[in-house]
Image (cartoon, rainbow, N blue to C red):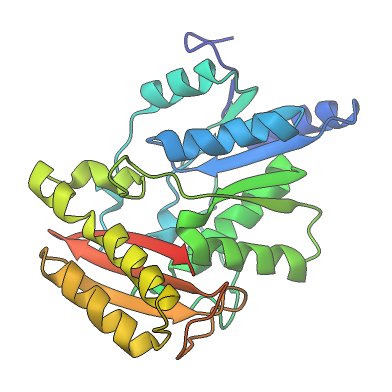
Length: 283
């Protein structure tokens, strides 16, 4: 045990050895992959994992491969001591913090592409982002060898892509989807929220307001996506948001739709003062 009170593993070989030991007792392993700077959204995943798993492992790794050109990897918020305190309080069994220079070899050449799904929505403006996400998650799953992986629906496209990867590659793991955790005013919790000034933070609540307005329009008999998005734009742009995209799509294959129906989704990505925020809602 270390000063943080939670067992930390920092190399792949030790993690594989631990997994081998856990497997001997037929324990169900729950895994929560994170990039750290934990908030209540992350902690809700750990809590869910604790409910239905015997052993819970949380990884903390800021994955350079999922940062697109122009995105500042060094600026991504980090506070490992705070993260470990939070995980200790939840009685997390193990924390995997791989050494940054050991996850990718200098001559790394292998990448995971989930075609069709990775180029939609966020993938249009964040080139190679989901290639990096899929690759690191596959690497982590090969190391941790978990039964269950817990992921939040705020990153809805990411969840769909990883579910497809797991299915296509016959990986023996199931993703447990968990609901988006929000602040009291509706803003989806995100590590990037820490970048927002108090004024911009208030304006950013227009994202959730616009999504709820879209749902209200549908329930009032207005299913036309063009009309719904037009009104969403008005709400967001009136608060200074610069829209990357707003799209309505089929929840299973992310195919754009022209008319909303029960079970479809609307997702958006919007810049506030240069900070890119995402959110989505089920109709």
